Image (cartoon, rainbow, N blue to C red; front, top):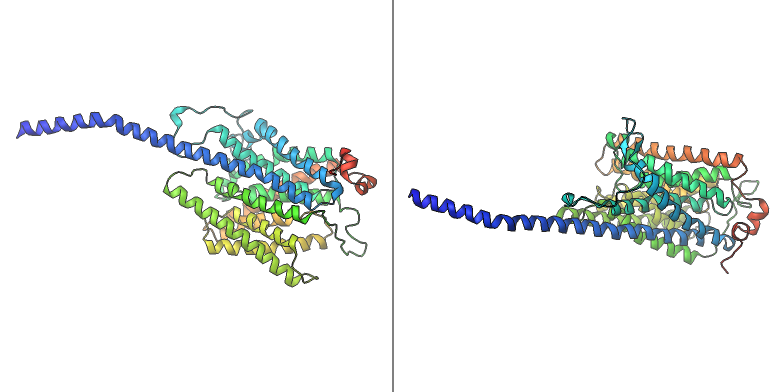
Length: 432
């Protein structure tokens, strides 16, 4: 009996010795597969977010008079280009570096981004540093581009270049560290899944600062406070731009899951995608109905409707991972109403935001952050603190930048240049 037992033990050990390499090989293969899926999908999502720059360019140029088309397109190309270089050199390190203060306020890691990954680290949920940077730089460029439309038609090109560089290099990365880099807001428990506050409110409140300091376009407001419409040259182009942004948003929100292989990750990504879709649709419909019912014209308005769609997207971005489908509809619908109210508020205050950047990205970005506390099961107080601290930082910093440029007489073009159009005055070329 003992001999038989020893024989069985021997067979078992021999089986394990033979099978162990195969099991180890399977584990390595699975780790490589998970790593490959996560990184390839994130790369695709990064491309989708970069593709949103085309949407911003089409939207903003469509909503501007023909004489400013080249200028608007030029600013969008610059936002992307300078954002890529400056975020590579400085911004990424400020956002994802080591805490320098011990209080989660400021970080630094060094210039540039690692170009290789230690093969021993390959596994599920591990990102190659190059694709990690690529995805993050797309967000940085988006935050800066939001400002372009609000200030169009009257800002010096050089002044815009400088302000865009400040956002990409300092404003966005520093407040981004507060949450996504593990700073003080993250420690507090603030939740912003894909950037309603971290990205959109930064751009929206920077846009508000620029619009206030610049002042309204010539002819926008009459002395009695009444408003004159300054129509864009192509609503069709603007609408197509919005639809491009909708497509890119699936990379924006879905990509923020960061890990995609495995049942739980797939389930989370599908919820995020569905909530993003529902929030967008609810925002568009709520904006359509509210503006149709309460505007002085009592007619359905295309511009307000597609801004409502964008507002719904912004509102759902912070919480798309943690709310139900029905809650996503409520959040999007509320954003659709808020964008109409925000636009009306700006007109009453005689603030000329040419494309509604603050109502869409600023106001609804704050709403998205707070909504994560109301609907997403997150603690409400951290959501309120984070949703106010980040936009206040962006507004205060960029207001100072625009104010200094104005004092130096470097901010706004002359009246003759504005009337002639910035395509000729600033670039010496036109689209046609």
